[in-house]
Length: 374
Ligand SMILES: Cc1cc2nc3c(=O)[nH]c(=O)nc-3n(C[C@H](O)[C@H](O)[C@H](O)COP(=O)(O)OP(=O)(O)OC[C@H]3O[C@@H](n4cnc5c(N)ncnc54)[C@H](O)[C@@H]3O)c2cc1C
Image (cartoon, rainbow, N blue to C red; front, side, top):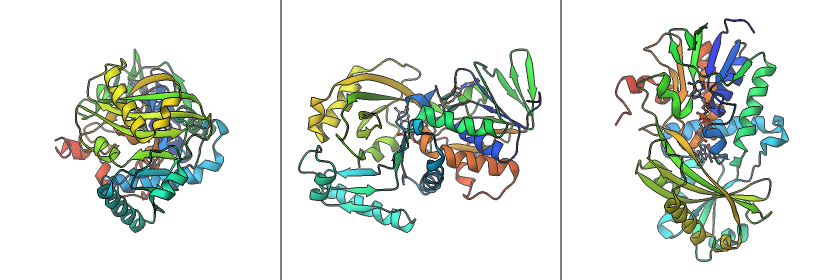
């Protein structure tokens, strides 16, 4: 690798990995630097649900685009990425939520995303461990699951196969115009991509990203206990509202037969300790939907920090204050899903190709202009 790469990607989480992969595929000489190790940040703490979400039109555009890219890439991914096209069931508790399910189905249909509404009987048949009396669900068969750390590594391997270099244990101290500074070393390049996740503001002051803590619980192995990613419809409100604390029912079947149970959201800075009270609330919520989870054994609980922005959209594009600096950060609870769309959009912008998506809603300039900072 030359001393002067075309692009330096800061951060080898799934977003940095996807950016590196797309930039290397576009023919750039890419150097990826990570302060710790690849796939070990928030990416290692995430659930790996590949999910189309419709909280806003730009969110729907980016998640749907990314979902298409995951579907295309899936056959080429190594087995340890554990890609599983299990689909999502958005579970409705009552008739009001069922009406919201139908509205969601209409929005998805308008965007060419397959989805069907399940009756209570169909839902019980699809997932027998859910409690009786639920109103139904929206089944989104195109959604899926990956194991995030190995997904990041697989993307990095693809970048390396196209000439990229990964250096782990290298903390970037500062970013300048077309350069990064590591200790006494200055690495010159054409462009720098700040993909440092929730740490991105440390290198680019002014980025409004805060760590939004989440807990996950994983059980022992119960193959076949559930077959779809299960999410309560109320998850959307939990994710959307920037409250100090919220929980929602979210259960995922892992390839190992384990069940991943989530999820929580808290704004408590970088405190990574387990909050027993919120884990209790999260598990109570899960038990309310799936009472027989009480018969399973939880083996581990951990926390991670979603990189959250005020307007719930990531920052993807040029940071106009610093020549050559690009941002790919702030993906909150959707960074595994939207990594591929982010990488492709960013690479298209860097090399001057027409992007498949309108980049304006994700442009970091909305922050410089004061939009999205409330
Ligand atoms: C509990 C939980 C559940 C989640 N579930 C899902 C889900 O189901 N689906 C989904 O799509 N998303 C999910 N997410 C969100 C997803 O995990 C994140 O959006 C995503 O991992 C962010 O990736 P990233 O690459 O931006 O950040 P990170 O993975 O944190 O990577 C950033 C990297 O930058 C490095 N770095 C930081 N500072 C420096 C520096 N100065 N120099 C060099 N390197 C540096 C770090 O070491 C790190 O490796 C979840 C998150 C949590 C916490």
